[in-house]
Amino acid sequence: MTKILVIEDEESVRENILEILGYEGFEVLGAANGREGVEAAQEFLPDLIVCDIAMPEMDGYSVLLAVRQMASLAAVPFIFLTARTDRSFMRHGMELGADDYLTKPFSSAELLAAIEARLERREVTARAIGGDIEEAKRRLVQMIAHELRTPLVSIEMALDIISRQVGQLEPHQLLELLDYIGRGSNRLHHVVEQMVLITQLEAGLLTADVLREQGMPVHVSELLIAAVSLGKRFAPRSPDAVARIDERDEDLTVWGDINALKHALAEIIANALSFSPPGGEVVVAAWRSGQQAVIAVTDRGPGIPPQQLAHALREFYQIDRERQEQQGMGMGLPLARRLIEVHGGALDIQSVVGRGTQVIVELPLAEA
Image 1 (cartoon, rainbow, N blue to C red):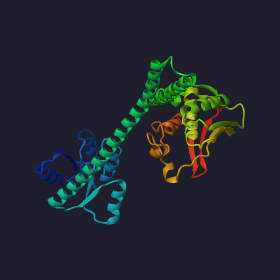
Image 2 (image 1 turned 180 degrees about the vertical axis):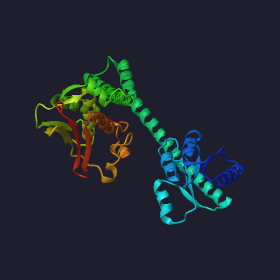
Image 3 (image 1 turned 60 degrees about the vertical axis):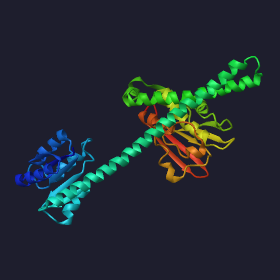
Image 4 (image 1 turned 45 degrees about the vertical axis):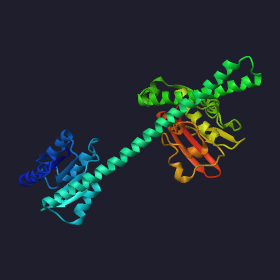
């Protein structure tokens, strides 16, 4: 049953509205002033609120602001009742987030029409949001299943061939099958490491406070070497592209979790390698800027169109996944950004179509 909260200080008006709505089959509750209305809203959790503006203790505007700050009621339809008709007065309420106005006196037909219109709009919006969520869930399940099953199938197939033809395979054939197994293993390792780090972040095991207490100095030069090696493993479909380290300032040291930082940079490097042309070069440069260590990963790939650049850091989103035939779950760059930010740093992407992309990471130096 649809629940409606009526907040009105004039008892006769309040009781009249409650009677009309109750007769129409709504579950109703009345409140005599704004303060009581806010308290009632928290417990009653209405599907719609009808509220007068001019009330003692707490006016309608304050009630609306309080309701919009409640997570469970932030989107509930809110209809104001007022005896004033000037447009500036009404506009102020709309700017605060009101959905509709009824000017006193009003008929029961006008009241019911306004309520039905807002409830219908809410239902349409809820259906649309629900459809988007279900579609996102479906795509996510398909993507995860694909990323887990595909490497397993390749590993099982190669092992099956080896077990059945172990005495008949030429050395180069055996090496090719072992390489097949290795690439499948790397792909599984990549997905597992992503899921582990995401779990640590969500569980509060990898936070700024934890890193301050349990982190350690990390030399940027060692970090870059390890990240480039791991990034190549994460990008097996770009064997011809190379990554070159350009360390402009030596002895840079940051503070944190070396595995998390290595993974973050490896995701960025792997992405750059994956979009580089055959034989292309990815430059991983590092230098000092004030109290920050700056790491820039630059490729000469196709670049990202401006309209798609905003989506590059969205979780589970991949730019041109079908056309580019990408692997992964679209978590690389979003996860890298979260890992960098939890270390007190920042990540930014700049791209020019036809010229390439540069990802810039800033991390506070350990001495800072």
